[in-house]
Amino acid sequence: MTDYALTLSEVCRAHALASVSLALLPGEIIGVVGQAGAGKTTLLRVAAGLLPPDSGTVQVWGPAGYAPETPVFPPALTVREVLAYYARFHASGPTRRAMVHDALELAGLAGGADARAASLGRADLRRLALAQATLGGRRVLLLDETLSGLDPLARRDLCGRVAHLAATGVAVLLAARDLGALERLGMGRVLVLRAGRVVRAGQLASLLAERVLEVILDTPPPEPPPGFRVTAAGLEAPLAGRTPEAALALCHAHRLAVRASRVRVKSLEEIVLDAHDAPR
Amino acid sequence: MHFLRCVLAEWTLVRPRLSRTRFGVWLLFLGTALIWVGRRGADPIGVALQAGALGAVLGAAFAAGSSADRAALAIALAHPTTPFAVATGRWLAALIPAAGLTIGCSIAVGWETSAALAGLAAAAAVAGCALTAVLLGGNGAALVLFICMTIAGAVPPEALVGVAHPGAVRLTVASALELGPALWRYREIATGSAGAVLHAAAWAALGVVVASGLVRRRARRAP
Image (tube, each protein chain N blue to C red):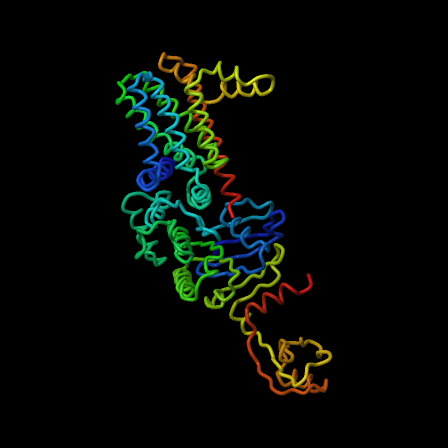
């Protein structure tokens, strides 16, 4: 029998989640994507135990650490004091101090531990949110947009820290509107949520292996061949098992003047948009 | 034991607030003003009651009144604590500076044990009421309560009820003065009134219980 770190079985929550099920293994990262209002935050808050589900069950291996989308900390405290405050809920004495030290190191905040929480920039706030979520040796992390809206350097740094946590066996459920962050993580599974339902799921690596044929035309076509869509330069179509030659033959059969063509992989953004636009 | 550790965690937020926010300055200003009034003939019980009540309102405002402090409650509840422990700790965080202010003012104007005890009871009751008020309405509610406590401490209740006439307004004011944490009532603690002690204890307990419900609700509604 598989020992899951987190399982959600047919979890429903009024106006937000409609029968969502997922199982997260230790050391696995699942990225939850979808438009605003798709139910990502509600899913994480239900998994964290902050919201009760209307129906369905949530099982977590030990308590889960939660980093909210807009983390707010007591403004008068320093970074170290914020972590010490939360660490007091978990332990006392030297254990607590070691916990704070480890969290500061893990999130890359050791150099700015004496800065006030009120003065932190977005990247450091996200680091602090990650640090407090890991306190107490949590084996399940629920990160709400922790990697979103950051500059490339900060995003790379935080992606590395999340990947390192996963490598130590911590299971991560990550809501992300910044799909580039998920691509940078380059691991785990992706769930696409639409109106509270999972409409697409798969390993990130296999999703990103989907290929697209781009065709540059001399003149725009009056009507694209079946399966193609019109772009600024010409046409494009997912290969979906076809060979590029077969797809190009379809263009030639429609008497289209093909100037050039290339095969590229689908971006995660295209995969999410396709899942969102697909008929229900 | 775990509950006490969680309560202590909230209480430890007081020291940084005293030294890094205006909380310390406000307490100092309030203490100086009350001692000045006390040395010019105000009775020690009145000074102790005002110190306890107004100090507790300030304490609650700086413990949970700002929007950032209230928003931060959501993350605290993602850790192994409970809304009741958070509310109890914040109540203590409001009460203990007020208790210190009460004892300091009582010593400065001439120590009377009964007056100091009345002030401490007022601080406990008002801290419960103020904590609920700031969790509901932020620091605006604290300001209203501060003004109410200042007036209720200075003017006899009969005079206030007499001003508010007629009908429903008068009834509301009379009920608020009768049921709410009012300094005229806690003055009776100095003369050994068990009813006044019970009234203060009830407000302290009710404040913590209602505040814990508000903390739970805030955590659920947080963005």
